[in-house]
Image 1 (cartoon, rainbow, N blue to C red):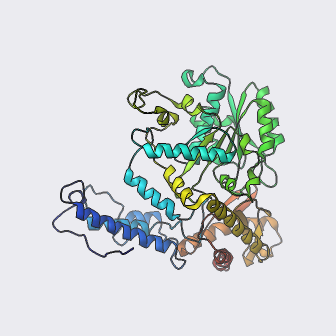
Image 2 (tube, helix red, strand yellow):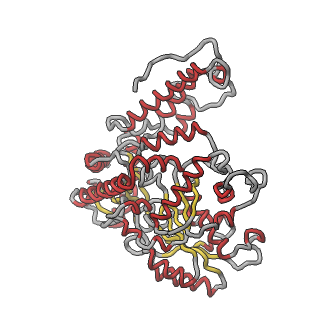
Image 3 (cartoon, rainbow, N blue to C red):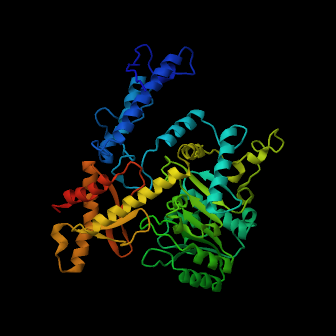
Length: 508
């Protein structure tokens, strides 16, 4: 690719409105402007993959709000020149976080997949909506093809689904479907007059599995936490006990979330055991596989989601371990037709039934949205480019790199694993700086240890060399949670985790 350097600053024109299409005689200026934008993006991509570059140039919120080196977030109401617009684009990337950097281990979603990035550029250019075949003929069919493929991988002969803005929204969809399945009258009559509904999730489940209780009027008090074992997996016997307790209280247990890859520990609930209890009591089983669903692409690790085909619905986020750029998240169900049944509003100004094409491909009445971004193309194009084997290789490598980190921690003084045998790509650990390693008072030792991870994290961000998340969990004080989901990560980057934490925490 040859990038031509040029300046598009024009004294003749005051602002962006008169410089670019659709105004007449602006095609050349538009082309030059977009080429300059492309060059900005290419430079950012190069820096993202360069280990010598910082992950971020950290500034506190008040500093960014006050303005730095000419970069201002202020909206004055006046139109700016194209030159200033380009500066704004450069500075926005400059002060942001390079989440594709090989040493960014902070989130479940990281990396910068070039194929799905290109797909995202294409869908923004198309700038269409997913609610009807009429305006998105290729994309609506593409979504149908991909959804059917994902359902098949889960193990369902039939099914349906939808792409939504993220796993949290998909978990909301699942509860809406489950409530409609057990009490379809609620859609028209509301909750008044019906018995209280109760839903269950493990105490380590993602918080979004409780939010539908507040959104749908079920009530957070009716979102019951289930105890977990020493590996962070839901205890099936406690689930059954709490279902029975709810029934004795005159309530209706209707929904259980099993998690495939918990957010912190990366635990996989035992789906067959949980499914057996759900079938026994007529309860909808949802599997939140937003993080762990990618193991279905791996022959080596597929066993972690044994029984997932027994679920009524599944959340699966390809923008996490499968590496597709944000956002790309699917809600899937084996109950064909239920999405439309519980969400349809039959707007005759949009979803006319007398169109001249097959209107079953109009998806708008399946969703709680109207306007819906085209997310499927990113996954479809990446799948075309990589095939099943490409995704499998990626998943296996990320888990192997995490296992390598586990081995490093075990033999490095001052480090201790929180979960000694991680199932997935989450590696949780403490770092004990020299000053507290030999403390005999365990209470004082843990009080001091609780402050270590936040302090080192602040130094990570100030230095911009590495980013790793931290959190407490139950009685366990703050620890690091390292995630490997970026295809750019190598063994040297894992080694760097240990040496950099030691460097940043040595003088604590």
